Structure formats: structure tokens, C-alpha cells
Amino acid sequence: MSLLDTGKIMVEMHDLTKIYVEGDETRSVLRHVNASVGEGEFVALAGPSGSGKTTLLNLISGIDTPTCGDVFIDSVSVTKLSEKDRTLFRRKNIGFVFQFFNLIPTLNISENLLLPLQLNHSNKEQSRRRVAELLDQVGLKDRLDSFPDRLSGGEKQRVAIARALVHDPKLVLADEPTGNLDADTGMAVMSLLERLVRSSGKTMIVVSHSDMVINMADRVLTIEDGQLAQRSWLRG
Image (cartoon, rainbow, N blue to C red; front, side, top):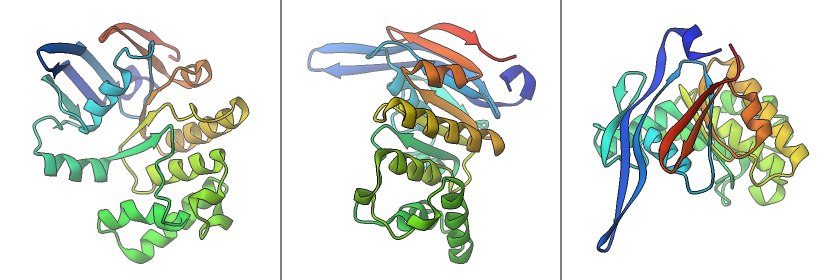
């Protein structure tokens, strides 16, 4: 599925620029990035280390704010929201998958998944059913009471995928989701993430150096030296 197929834009980036001031020096990380991502599209962000990929992901999510420019998610200007409203918007509309899992070690697997639902004040009984359903889908229904330190890297990332999807977000953002896994485990985890995201019609943007991940995407946006250098359509 591509932007041209869906007819609806989920993410719009308008002239995004990010400049950091370090003492008397300024460092330009992103410069005038313009791009759109369609509803249901899987877009990979590629480029060399330090090119600005993770910074761009942080601007899309509202974790960071641009020096200038704007980000729209489902027609909402995330950039113009207050810090509190950006946090609330993120909790409801965005799911995250990180390279190092970011599971809370003092919570068991069920509690890690319940937390996003609790923050959104979801119904408790419906939340428990949703958690059980997703853990079943990622093959971990028998590990509800296990703690993260008892899981392998692949199992932790499967939990992280379930957590990213548990609150039914419109947009999934993943930063090197296979970067901390061996090749076979990474393939299995990424295939699971792709299947779950596509089957639910969600939009996904993934930062990755992995050719395997990039080849799964509908489209690749390549960032070089803080600028959008290339747009490649992989699927029609």
C-alpha cells in the first residue's frame, strides 16, 4: 500500500529544521525536510549514522520540537500543541518500538502492557482482555507474570511490539527495532511487527540500517546530512 493508493495522508512534515546551540556554536541536524506518509503505509527512514534519522522520528512524535517547520499527524499540528497536550496526544495516537526495548523492569509483562491503557484511562476489564489477546498474537500468552529479565532479547522485543499496539494507535514509530537482535531473531520479530501493523491498517515509520527491514517497506526516505536526499518506491 502506498500514499498514492490510500488517498489519505497520516503524517505531514513541512520544512522541518532542527538546530542545536552548543555554547557559541550551532549545529544543524535537519534542514528543510518535507515529506508525507499515507494512512496504512510502511515507510523506512534510511541513511548513515548521524544523518538525522532519529531526530526526525523524535520530531514526528513530538518528543522534540523543531527549530522551525511543522508536523501534522492525522491533520493535527503536533508542533503547535502545548507540551502537556503533545504528551496526551502521543499516549493516545502513537506506539513506539525501541532498539533496547524500554520495558519497565519492576513490572511484569502484563503490567508493562497495561500501563499505556491505564494512562489513557481505559476500562480495566477491556484492558485485561486486550493485553491477553495481544500477548497471544505475539506468542507469549503463557508469560503474563514473567518479568523482563526472564525473557530473551527476541521475547522482549515481542513484548515491546505488543505494548506499542495495545492502545490501538494510529501511528507506529520504530527506531532500529532489530538493532539489538541477531539476524534470525530480527527477521522473526520484524515479520511479526509488519504482519500486526498491516493487518490492523496502521501507519508505520521505521528507522533502520537493515536491508531486511528496508526491503519490507512500501517506500524508503533516505536522509543524508540532515536533508531528504532520496525517495524510493519499493511497492506500487
